Amino acid sequence: MITSLEIHGSDPLIGGKAFGKTGAYVRITGTVRGEVDPAAPGNRGIADIDKAPRNARGRVEYEADIFILRPADASLGNGRI
View 1: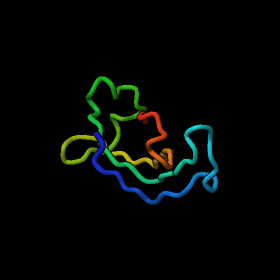
View 2 (view 1 turned 45 degrees about the vertical axis):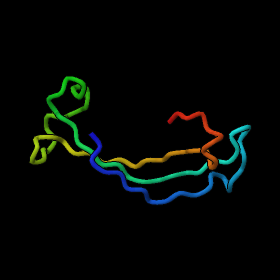
View 3 (view 1 turned 180 degrees about the vertical axis):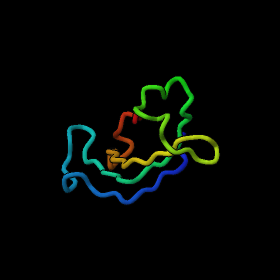
View 4 (view 1 turned 90 degrees about the vertical axis):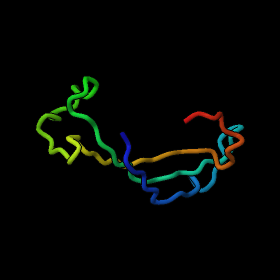
């Protein structure tokens, strides 16, 4: 479960160069934070999750950098992420 998303910035990708019918893209960077239930069957594949520290809710917290590309003109996108 994601608990927070922090956007650090956004800027034109490759100086605003256009790509096909979609045109220019914007690069968005940030940090996502969340937590997972170490006992959930879907999380069994995470290496050493059973050894990770737990928060007050008994979950393991994580943090990751994000890099999102989106059309500068959203009306030219396909509506998917």
